[in-house]
Every structure is written in C-alpha cells, then in structure tokens.
Length: 421
Image (cartoon, rainbow, N blue to C red; front, side, top):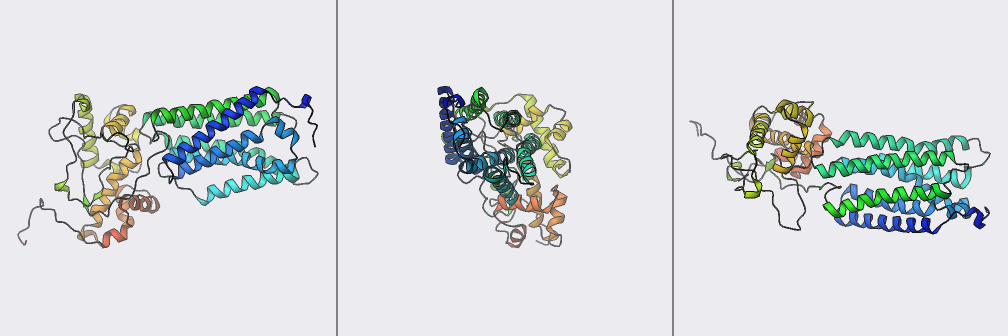
C-alpha cells in the first residue's frame, strides 16, 4: 500500500468542502432531472451522469487514490472513465429532441468501463505486453468522446428555437468538453496519472462551477429549459388541420397562454387530427399582451405563403437558415416568430408537422391508395423511411399502414358536391 503519511496527503479542508458541495449539487441535479422527466431518455442519461460524477468526485480524492489498493479503486476508476461516454450520450440527448437510447450507447459505455477497470486492477504498471495498448486506449476515451460530444452539439444546435435553452445547451457542451480536455492533459502530465495538490482542488472547483451554473439555470428558468418536452402520441387521426400563421382578420397571434403550473408544450404544427378542419378554431381572440408589430405580421404572412402554398418543406435542404434566406430576414427573427408566436420549440418538429400533414392527407385519399408509403413520405420531404415512421408513430399513435386501413369517420362538408353526388 502506498505511504499514507501526511506529507503525501495534500488533502485540505478546502478540498473536502468543495467535494462535499459538488456531490450535493450533483444529487440535486439528479433529483431535478429524475423528477421532471422520469420517462425521458435524456433525463435518465442525465441522472446516470450525475451519479457517475459523484463517484468520480469521491474516487479522485488524493487521499483515496494514495491509500486505497488498486483492486478496490478499479470500480471507481471504471465509472469515472465511463463518464466520458455518458457525457457524449447526454449531449446527444439534450440537443436532439428525438433522442432514443441505442445499443451503441450502452455498448460504448460498457466497453469503456470494462477496459478501464481491467487496466486499474491488473494491467496498469505491469509487464503485460497488452498493457501499453490498453492504457493508450483508456487515455484516448475522454478525447474521442469529447470530440463526439462537440460534433453532436454542433449538429443539433441550430434546430433549437428556445433561445435560453440554446445558450444553456452551448454552455453544457463547451464547458464540458473544455473541462475534459484540460484535466485529461493534466493527468497525462502527472507521473502516475493522478491529480495531486492544487491541481486536484482546481479540478473539483471547476467541475463544481459548471454544475452550479447548470443547476441554478434549471431552477431559474424552469424544468423545460434543458430537457425537451416529450410529446405523447395523439389520438388516431384522420383529418388534416391546416393552421393559419396569421388570423384572417390580422388582429394577433394564437393564444399560447396556459394555466400556471402546467407543463410547457409544443403546439402542434399542421398534422392529422380527429376533429374535422371546418370545426377547428386554430386562433383565439388576441389579448393586449399578445399584440405584434406590422413587420412581424408581414413576416408571418410570408412564412404562411411559403409553407402552405409553395410547400417549401418538401425541399431536401430545408433548414432554418435556408428558410430565413428565402424570407430575407435574420435567423433570430424567424426563430423568435416560430417559437414565441407559433409555440414551437424545435424547427425540425415544426417542418415535420407539415410533412406529416401532407402524408396523412395522401394516405386518406382513395385516389392514392396504390402509392407506396415510402413514395408519399419522400414526396413530402422526408429523407428516408426510418425517421418518417418514427415521427408518424409519435404524432398519430399508429403506423402509416394502420392509419391507411382505418375508415374516415367524418366528411368534409365544405367540399363541393359533384353532379353525381
């Protein structure tokens, strides 16, 4: 066992206080995410990461690393290294509203845990030929998964329409990647790969600062800011509810006010609905607080023209940037319009609503019964059958085939009647 004399134990009261505070905040973060989104994949990953960081905070204590035998340290080291994989999965989860935990995520975490646990218990500082290889792989894990986390953040960030959530997500991704890389370099530069003295205290202080910011932001802005709302399947639909982005009289936007204490929800884009279109009232009377300037009304009308008449959602390269370019407005104005006026939190959900509406109408059209579902999905703008099937199932609670087989329960009374009846 290593010498445990006080000379070799840079274990100060400050270090103890910081680690205790960090563990406490991580527990609070886990409770917040587990309480607010118990069934959401992102929340479950977040809870696992918070608890994993608790293990890392305790296991990286200088006293623990200097006095506890390597065999007993192995589980703590394994969980700590596995946190790099959890951070990547967590970033994917909070940036992608359609996130689903996949076998590849679990397999990556298990591989990191098993490899690092084996290195700590058996291979580290041994004469085995595989030791340099496995230790090199373990050191590469934080670097590789930090890069993957940064790529995941960049890939999904532009679709987020909630400005406060965008800022918080960027902070989580940037600070997490920077923390991982900086202290990975510090560990690689130390003789035994361990942080001691002031570097160990600085490590826990920086992590405490990051977690404190996340916790305070979540408490300040509400439970929906970091983790997206996971919509429940709608009732089996048959009709097509076409929304109006601007009310016919041009007086104001739809009401998005909800009772105090209710969970924020994503207002549906045009999608299938059980209520016939002619019986729906998509716009509520405007309230004084909901008035908008004429420039925003003109932008809403132009957006309505593009989406409902020109059907630009069919384009393969549809993005917030391309749509803003078509409208000749800055992206932030279009993002604000779709989020604050129409109630959408994610651009992809907004666009896919129109695509789903078109497919639903085609599936209910007897003249198109011979067309394959894939053809209808591609014509509406979906790039492949997998994402379409998932989006359709979430929106309707049915598969496209099941939807097509269901009888239409209502007749559009506003449609013209032919001479043959």
